[in-house]
Length: 264
Image 1: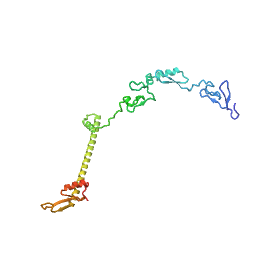
Image 2: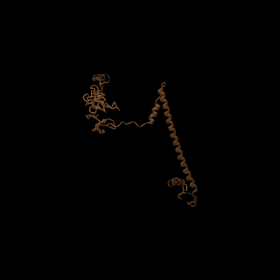
Image 3: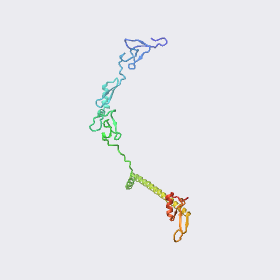
Image 4: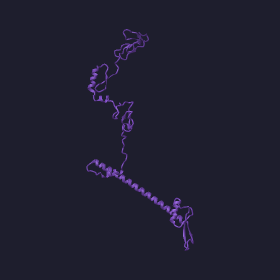
């Protein structure tokens, strides 16, 4: 068998009726015997260990779990080990119980293809009752988003600290800091309102001063304006040269018709 250069080349087939020399033999992965091309399969050489790597699972009738049979071991031993260690009869109902549509009177069994989860109540329903009115959907849960500042402030004021309590001291510290923050916010708001009021008054006074200066520059004296021959003072608008006897009327005219500016 073989050649002078390769003395170990080629082996005989393990089948007793064959014994053929094959230079490219096949080794069975179950019985580890050498076979030729014709007898390389399990069936052709009738392998006695063909099921050595097979996986056999038996469903337990008590807990509905799968029990894997160990090769080269008695199935009774494997079954006894399962019953004594991991068998849980309470799991049988969970596995075998079929999920149904929760709508009263509906007997539709929910599977992957006919199950739809409602977006509002997050409950699985069948295709027939997938819409809210069909399964009387209560709607999404409303979260309380409103926050009452005054109620929280009043509740914090009503809380009275109790002596010899660490939790109470922590609550009182939090209440004090909260009240300080609220007072600071109120003081800032009042200061802002005062500043805004001062700016408005200053702008109004500036407008009135400008109107008075324009009036003094545009005064015109006329004689004989009345029967008694007394002098009559007329204030002239620097924008449109319109005369006014009353300075208040001139200021109102400038603010109304010329945007509040009496300068030319």
